[in-house]
Length: 118
Image 1 (spheres, rainbow, N blue to C red):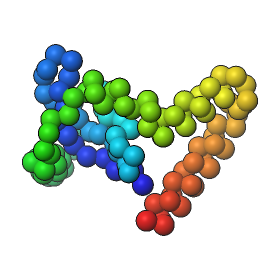
Image 2: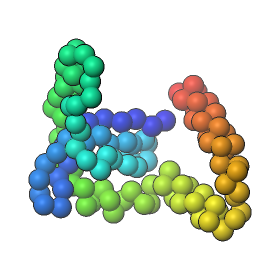
Image 3: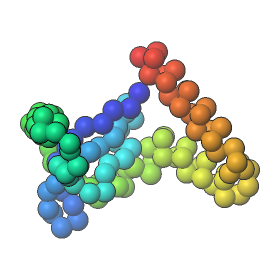
């Protein structure tokens, strides 16, 4: 089952930012390209709730995560290997693009079944 959380990450210029990271039992498999934004909320309480969640998450964080180190590991994560293999199958014609919607439905069903079993 996958999760996400806010974490402080250091970029290639050694600048810090708060980003969303996505992880599971195998580790981090993705993170947002840009630091989180506090724009786009419709009501004040949503901003406050997001700030509280962000603060709670980064207070628990022990080490600052380095984007470069994460980027080196992400391609080897099982989720990303599977995604790359699927992309190669689409490019080679093994999987027809018309069947992508069927694949998405199947993956969503499998994910829901995994989440329900946890």
